[in-house]
Length: 114
Length: 115
Image (cartoon, rainbow over all chains, first blue to last red; front, side, top):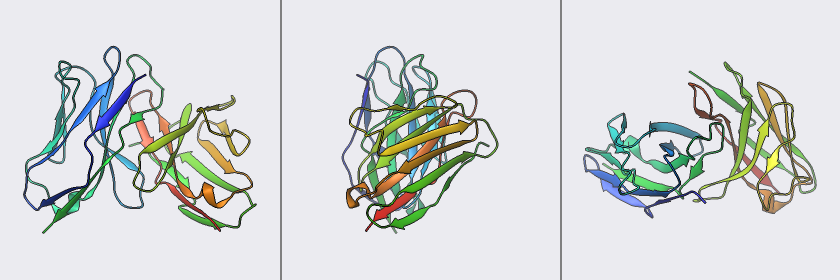
């Protein structure tokens, strides 16, 4: 079945460092891809998404590009802030199945220190 | 934008009692809602999918008699944990949508502690 694999954490960075969190997926067809962020004790917030190959999602300085050839959707940010400390989840929905549940990776904890 | 309100945010109950968690879509109608369970430092595990007016579809391994899901209206879905035990302690999150312009919208989660 469809699945998402993301890098193990935790990721610990200093403020203004460059961030990459790797995410790869297994799916048939062309799934939609998402990054969600979860702050302590809260639900999930959509960070960005991409719905077709070569699309780039971006928000709040974060970016991810849908790479069909490498089945990847890596999350990047050029300069992290302490406020970016959270858990980041890569997720997908299967191709052409609107209304089905998201399939999540295991999450990557990011800790940014000043 | 779309907002999903989930209550309560925290609940502590005694073993053997039942707890109801509500998930409301405030400014849109949610035909479909999803319930997840999240263990500490782990990902979200889909428990069930509920569609308004019909029975919920449970994932393999989830006890439907223990986790009762009701989706009686387009704006409200409830999860009742019946005869709760300490092993049911967890973080429960609901999500609405997956269709249309709003995409998936998550509630803020409920921390259940069974003592």
